[in-house]
Image 1 (cartoon, rainbow, N blue to C red):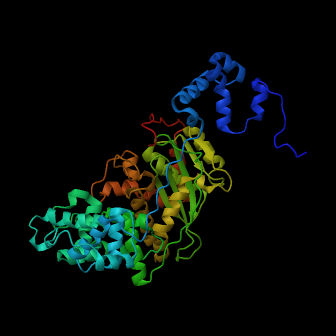
Image 2: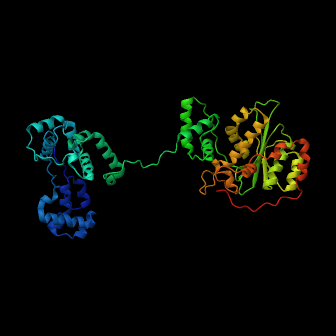
Image 3: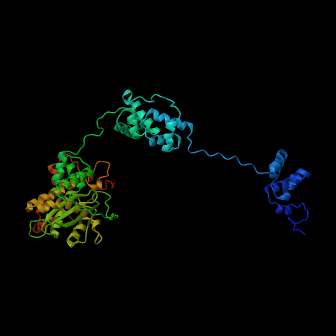
Length: 498
């Protein structure tokens, strides 16, 4: 007996038994709506029996009423779109190829392909363009679209024509040949369009817009004179030139310095980079902190031992209040400089120094207590906390070369006094970003502003005090007696750092 093709099953109307036997989607749809269509079973009851939504059963039943069995079949896919032959160009592209060649026969094949790509988004091959030129349609126009450059009276129209051709994809060479002008004219027009848009189409004056350069031969000569000291950098040179009435930015001075170094084979200043740390003795008002230290001038050529520079700096304005060059670094020399600073400017709230014995002498401590001055000391091996060290670094760049060149004690003292004067009157990097014009320490401390070169009184006020220069150990007793036992009355803070 032959084997049955289909397995024998008992007939049933239970959907749970029928659904596992259905495989085709059309069969499933039909069995779902068959009781509703044939026997009028309620849609709500059929939905509860099959678990399908009522809306689905309603929708399939309505479709069956309208289209019959065809509604059970899936929708036919849309007919495939026939592929276009890439070798066949659309008629507008073929016409554009012929018109481009007719308007400007000097067009290269690759230029025509680029223009077509910009206009139609398709780049035909060189062989296709040549074949179209040989067998293509007739030109749609036989005249020029734009007249030559010389025949366009309006300058705006001339430049606008260049822009239009460039937007179409024409090269600068083709635009220049088509309009009968130079390529440089086309380049200039396109550059002005990129930078100024429509504002660059009109004619403009050929006069330069920026003023004449400030870098004159006199300025370069002054910089050359200053470069005899190889330690001067661009900022110090800019400050020195401003003192002479020549205002050049530090960057301009840096370029002049580099030019002179190349021309005259001059030395370049050494520079070092350090990470910026938080300053523990940051002055909040005038005469809040004074900073004092002693520097060894070991570069001098006078002999007879070491020479020292004792200086006191005001922390708020960064001004040198008193300074002296001496042969000794003892208590008497230091206290003479301190006396000169206090006699002219009053007492500070605090005095900052390192751990040197001169500054911690019991006599000095007695004077601090008598004057109400708080004695502060920097941390060991942290010289950056003493702002006078920054001033000494400036002194190294501005004065060490001249200290070494001094031939006598008088020359050395004169060089030192000039350094104090220049340091106090030249603009300071710490005040460079101020917006009130107070870029020098003299303007920052609140003393009268200097106009032009400093006067004789100003020079005496900010140069090293002559009395401090002449005081020796034998003359220190009157100086010590000059310190009154009563504390100094400090003025109220006039402001804070910007």
